[in-house]
Image (tube, rainbow, N blue to C red; front, side):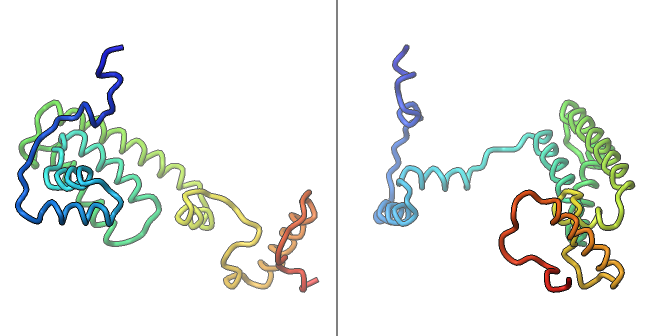
Length: 190
């Protein structure tokens, strides 16, 4: 085992001495202590923020394409729709040459990622075509198509629908093996 393997990462990091103006060291120290950080951590944190790592175009586009899928996941908000539209337009612009300066290797990666995204979108559209309105609503809320005997919107049910839900709820209670703690709905309706 060589000496470097036994050292802490901070001992292996590049060291650099900086002359600080009068009072700056004290301000950094006070701020770092107030937030439970060391002076070194505070200085490095701010340097990272001010000198961010550059993004390779294909990596950044891959991140954006992944975000598109998340943003479009059942949310209906005009601002999000506008954002996703602009991202799609930018990616399409890269592939068509409208956006200049994208090298050939990055462009091939972007095209490949976009094809996968389009396939996932088509698959999602096929899955959504088989859902009823209640399943779509639940998917938009939780990302799953769970079904509940008593839906959260009881006030929207007709008397007949409420009667059917109560019957289903009662059957579900009868089939339970463990007792229910707390308030049991519909108990006073019997």
